[in-house]
Length: 337
Ligand code: SF4
Image 1 (tube, protein in one colour):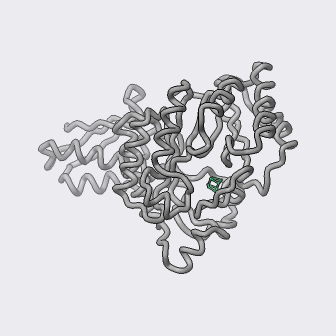
Image 2 (cartoon, rainbow, N blue to C red; image 1 turned 135 degrees about the vertical axis):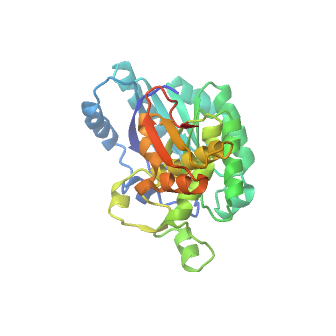
Image 3 (cartoon, rainbow, N blue to C red; image 1 turned 90 degrees about the vertical axis):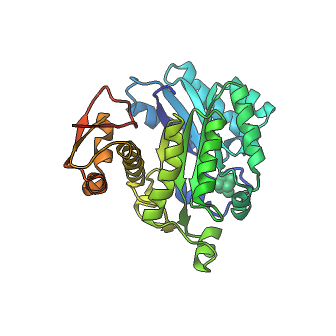
């Protein structure tokens, strides 16, 4: 997947007749409502801060883009087209539900130079989709993903962990299915309980057990490991910080922690290194880990947690981590000295 910059434009809940139990788009995006006429202004503001060194995409996020009023959708795509024609950006990215994808929609997206389609798959377990009142089945996701790929779009699969009726095993399976769909990237969102949602009621009446900080990290790591094993880049782990979240406004419970991504990677790296060390005669030896510079702090873990754990578990004399620009990102390796 090409490195690029997104200019995100949030279109919360516009056109969405569904009522997923976890959804409160206004809180997620930090935008109280969508104002069509403000989009141009927002784009102008955003482009004035982009330095143009990386390819740029206008990203219509937040709602179910292909479910909004057709004229409105085309107007937004035409607007993005003006920036493409002006050489300010390269293409468009949209996010939508799997059941709002068909050939006609994809033709239209292609015409307006959309390059990336993000599908809100959330789970490929029908029991979970039913418990979330999601309103579509896993089959819809498989069908939509196949069509998106057939039309040559870049596919990003979005999934959630900790949803009602979901288990760690079903989340591993969802991650694996997203890989098998041929996804070019994935997003993992630990479930957050927002005020004024059905999930908040389910939490209050005890029919749903929200993720704790620890369980959100472990469940996210469990899904992340599948993407890492299959070489599918995870472009986001955890909700983006937004005004509503930063102020704490509207969050009742669940997996919202600014460092959840960092912590989940840390768990994965610990498990990878433990698997390698488990194959070696480690007692009394020193371990040398080579890691991409951006992975070093995650390899060591918060307050040295991974280092201490691995030293204790494998009776190591020492645990050294070397930042190595030549190391493969997300794949630290270990040898013994
Ligand atoms: S489909 Fe998307 S926007 Fe609509 S209720 Fe569900 S999560 Fe919210």
